[in-house]
Image (tube, rainbow, N blue to C red; front, side):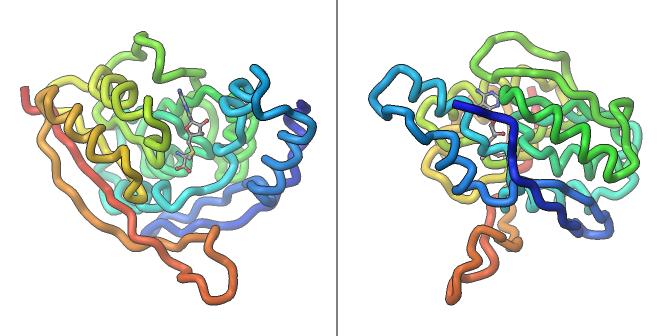
Length: 234
Ligand SMILES: C[S@@+](CC[C@H](N)C(=O)[O-])C[C@H]1O[C@@H](n2cnc3c(N)ncnc32)[C@H](O)[C@@H]1O
C-alpha cells in the first residue's frame, strides 16, 4: 500500500463570519480505492488499511456544524484553550485559532500533520496558533485539561463511543465544555450516555449545513447535523 501521494483541491469555507481556506483530498472514494488496490480484505493488512483510511482528508458536515458553533462565540474564544480529537483537516481548530484561541489539534493518522501545516499556511496561522499532537483516543494518556474539547464525526465504529467518551471527559476540568458534532450515527447516543454518566449536562442543537458529498443530481445539498454541547458539572 502506498500512502501520501494524494490528488488535492482547495476551496474556501465560510463559517459565520470566519473564512477558512482549506486543502482537501480531490476525491475521497477514489483515494480509498487506490490505497486498497491489491489488498486482500481478509488479510491482516486489511486492519492496518482501515486505520490508515484517509477519512481525515475531507471536511465532513459535522466539522462545518461544530465550526459554525465556535464561530458564533466570536472573539469571546480569544485566550481560551481548545483541544480537538480526531481532527482530520481540523476545520474547528482553524476557526478557533482565527478567533484567538490557543489550540491543540490531534489525530492518529500519520498524514494529518502535513495537511494541517499547509492549511495553517493558507490561513496565515502557525503552529503557535494550532499545535499538532499525534494522539490515539484508544490510549489512556491525556494531554491536560482544556476550556473546550471538541470533536466532529468521530463516532463511526462500535468501539468509538466508549473510548471517545472517556477521552473527551478525561481532558475536562469542572466548567470545561465538550462540543461534539455528529450526523446522527448509531453510536452517538451511546457516547452521550457515557459522558453524562461522568457528570456532564448536555444541550442539543440541530444545524443544517452544506454537504459536499451529496453532489449527485437530485441529492439534497444540505444535511442536518447534531451539535451537542456538554458542560462538566461535578
Ligand atoms: C470521519 S473523520 C472526521 C474528520 C474531522 N473531524 C471532520 O469532521 O471533518 C474521523 C477522524 O477520526 C480520526 N480517528 C479515527 N480513529 C481515531 C483514533 N483512534 N484516535 C484518533 N483519531 C482517530 C481519523 O483519522 C479521522 O481523521
